[in-house]
Structures are given as structure tokens and as C-alpha cells.
Image (cartoon, rainbow over all chains, first blue to last red; front, side):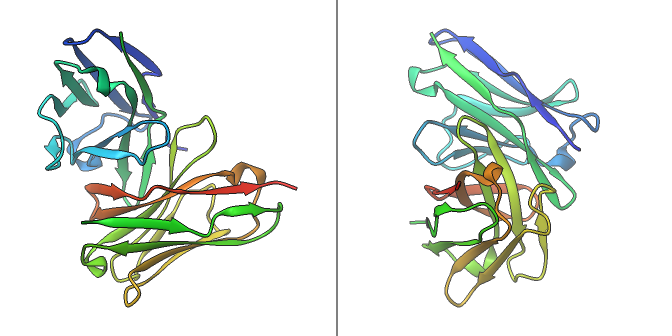
Amino acid sequence: QTVVTQEPSLTVSPGGTVTLTCASSTGAVTSGYYPNWFQHKPGQAPRALIFSTSNKHSWTPARFSGSLLGGKAALTLSGVQPEDEAEYYCLLYYGGAWVFGGGTKLTVL
Amino acid sequence: EVQLVESGGGLVQPGGSLRLSCAASGFTFSDCWMHWVRQAPGKGLVWVSRIHSDGSSTAYADSVKGRFTISRDNDKNTLYLQMNSLRADDTAVYYCARGYGSGLVDYWGQGTLVTVSS
């Protein structure tokens, strides 16, 4: 069974920078896993941020960026805002099926 | 404006069945792959199923394979999820989401709650 692992929780100060990562139990995450990143706040629909590793949607704030880092997919938030406090999920493609990571609860404090 | 509206959730007994619908508007539905994703209470997002734009190909998470069936009606711009042999651990908010190929999932609906309990 494929497992996608994210940091359970991270804390960042307003204006700071934080990097969330996404690892696969099958080995290094590459562009062929087409990493997607989503932001999810309670009571709301998830919001897509990044697709295919590093591509932003038209609505994605400039402070969000995606990359591959040390064999993992990564989401970096630069100049964090209070409204960025949320759960963040990565999604990886495994040749026909997709698997979400367990999510990272980001606290802005 | 892209809109995805789920319906059909509710309370069902273990072993029962339910069919969810997702009405799409604001885009060319027949061009898009579609996904179902769920979130159990207090848990994370879990990918459930995907269907190709023309319905020719489907895929399922192991946890629902053989019990759930995804389908679509491109004339009605509607996605479906037929859920049979429901179990307590199927209790979740079910979301539909739009996709393009392997690399992109973008718009999501607001979700519909399914509760499996006696």
C-alpha cells in the first residue's frame, strides 16, 4: 500500500517562510508524480494551489511556490499571512490512481 | 464560473447503498476527467475514484474497489458515484473535483455528507 507522508504540523510567524514536504513510500518523488498541492480550511471546499510540481493556478497567491527538494515534493510559503493558517495536502499520481498525503496543519503564530 | 454541486448524501444503514451526484456547470464537462475525494470526520483527504472525460476509463482506491462505481452523463453534465455495501468507515464528506489528465486537479465542490450508521 502506497503511503504519502507530510509533516503533521508546522508553525510559522507572520511574514516568515516555511516549506512543507511530501514524500512517497515508493521512493523519490519526481515530476512524473505530477504533485498537486491544496489548501483546506474547516467548512470550506479544498482550494487548489499548485499542479504538476510547480505550476500555479490563476488564483494562487505569488507567495506560494512548488518544487522538488531532496527527493520530495515541496510547497514553500514566503511572507506568510495570517489567512494562510490551514491544512495543506499534497496529491501524487501513481499511474492511474492518486494518493493524498496525510496533510500538514500550518499554524501562523 | 465553474461550479460543482454535490447531492445525494444522507444517513444509510451498514450494508446499504447510496448514489451521489455532482452537477457541473460553467465549463465543458465532456473535456474533463472527474474525481471523487472524501474526508472522514477529523481525518485527511482521501482520493476515491476517477473517470476519464468520455467515461472510457475508471480507477478506484483499494478501499472502495468492487463496492463503488463512478460514472458520468456528459449530456446532463453530471458525475455519479454509486456506493454499495456501505460500511461505517465510509462515513465522510464526499467531494467531486475537476481534473485534466494526470497532472491537474483544480475546482472542487462543497461536498455532501454520507453517514453510515444503524
